[in-house]
Structures are given as structure tokens and as C-alpha cells.
Amino acid sequence: LVHDLEISATRAHARARKESSRYERGPQFLGELGYFEAQSRDLHLRADAGDVAPQEIGPIVDHLLEEARRADRRMRDAQTFPEVWDDSGRTITILQRLTTLVRS
Image (cartoon, rainbow, N blue to C red; front, top):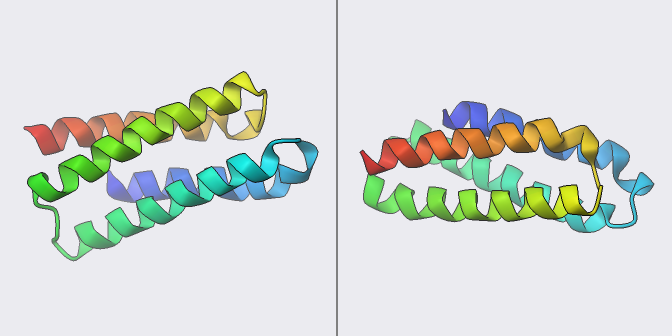
């Protein structure tokens, strides 16, 4: 799942980079998407290293899910980057699945 999360976040950030000049708030949301890409990469690296203790990863995943939901809502409300809304939604779905896994 963390691999899928990183792919989704990377794809959203790449698409946003291509389109950022078309939107007034593009740079703001581009920064947020870059943050998710970096955090997803870090989570993937931790998982590959076997550093996935639920008590440590759980709060990170919870925080990322909360931030992803907020960023997605702001992008949609601002009608910014509709090109990445599917990837953003996919990222949220993956984070929800990860949250369920780390809590079980």
C-alpha cells in the first residue's frame, strides 16, 4: 500500500507541476502536493526498511490522512487542479486503508 501511496502522490504532484501556471492558487497547492509526495516517499522508505511499528507509523498515517483530506477539499473548493483530483482521492483512499491496517 505504501508503494501505491507514493505512486499516487508522485503522479498528483507531477501533474500539478505541469498545470500550476494555469491556476491562481497553483503554487500554494503545488507545495502541499509536494509535501505529500515527500511524506509518502519517506513512509515507503520506512516500510522497505522494516520500520513499520504501528505505534510509530499510526500517528504519521493519521496526520497524513487528515492533511490530505483538508488539501483535497481546499483544492476542490478553489476549483484548482481538477487534473489531480482523481489521484488526490486515490491517495486518501490508500491512507484510509493504511489507517485501518495500523490500527488492527
